Length: 338
Image 1 (tube, rainbow, N blue to C red):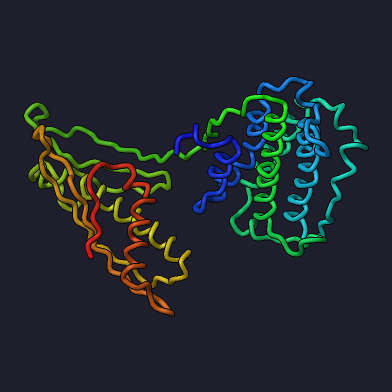
Image 2: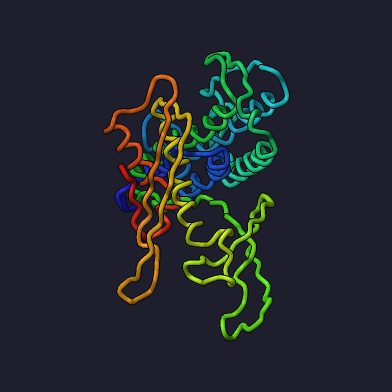
């Protein structure tokens, strides 16, 4: 959907509520929240920020001060949950704060910098934790047991909850809507080091070995070569991995991993998954050879409770294909054999 069809807040909701979100996705959203506020108030002067155009509701400045103020005790809750076993977290009545702390006299830039500093520092602390730490719990005086992850999700959700109120005030003041420019996730980089050395005997005539190595960020090094279907022996190495079969394996692996995640979300248990994937090469209209199709042949053994029916299985595979990172990155057709 084009961003022009979305309000700023709706676009942010789509960005933040991701069914495949990782811990790093959540931390990115947590750190970026103050920037969402900056974008929501863009173009508002002091008079706009302190105005109360809707009866009985805070000004935009008071909303931002409230968000910064609650970040102080949100951070305290996160830190106490990390440091102590099941600490008690007291609920807070937020209503008196705006008047008694005189939010209308605060500086909005100071409030935003406070949020950025608190969230930046806390995100660094959270990134140093092991995965188990995210399931540490505390007891909230009103909501009962909560996990650390739920606290961070709640902190992101708190900003998203208040952004529509800022939109309402902009509209009531006759201001144009905030620009619906999607915040950018800091996606990870995927690195591989490819190394080859010329060992002759006649490079100019194509008489040189194609054997080389792939080294990945975890330290694994694999022997690679041109395919013997492309470069005959002795200049290729049949037992080494070639780029074409690596592409097929990547597509099959990504589809499998996405399928497993979807199956688990649907309530099915997979005990074993095997795929004898095949890549087909041909020439395009320019007579250039390319992998034109990858055919997956998944065989699945289901756990207790059995597996999906034929229609459900087809739907799981179709959704896995649509969400597969590799399938979305290549142009060749990917077929799932029935």
